[in-house]
Image (cartoon, rainbow, N blue to C red; front, side):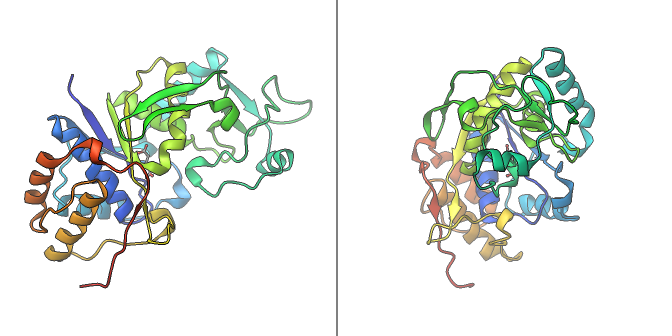
Length: 307
Ligand code: GLU
């Protein structure tokens, strides 16, 4: 079976060290087995999309020697496929309309809202609309009726993972109150449509994986392999990534590209690759790449002074 991996950035800013690690890591996993590597833009959350960042991200991938296969896919062009998946879930009673506002859910749970937009489901859903909308209320979001029981999977980096989705998040949103399809549904539909066999991404998305597997099962899709890479943090442990707008990659000079690529490779457990041309570096990295050497936790990175 040919390995098909992918890199699925949200075009919300330029590539950052965190996203570069995801790009290089997913590329290494796919290419070490002679597999294909796809690029998909996750641009459903339109208010966060930054014009021009797609071009910037693609140009950065080229500069770092990361060549992709096939056409670039954009989630904003795939609404019909998400509608179809939602209709399939609806027919089987696996989704339901929900009238609850975030404020109502927070009051019910008296828990602070999550600040992660990928994870914008708020506190554990208490099941308010599971049995039907309360009298006189109108539907806002559509939620997936999460089956009872634990989801188990073997992460290629983190090992055996088990999560009870109903207990941890409850029935989660698949179509948001403000209109767009939720990341969780779109990613599952797209990975299946693109025959992705291997999902390699940042450790911040580990908490989404059990939900995605639950959706795959409901839709009759195969479950790909998963590998969650170290989350890049500052030496103090603060998350770095484009969602924080931190750590833009250095400008185009060759030496800095080599240094940044060496840093990304060291986060992935490949130390001591001499900075040079990115293609030569990646060629050497592929020989030395050993998924078992990828650290399981966060990677604290000190950027040091600009050269
Ligand atoms: N679009 C997500 C991000 O940029 C990645 C989603 C995924 O790889 O499944 O963080």
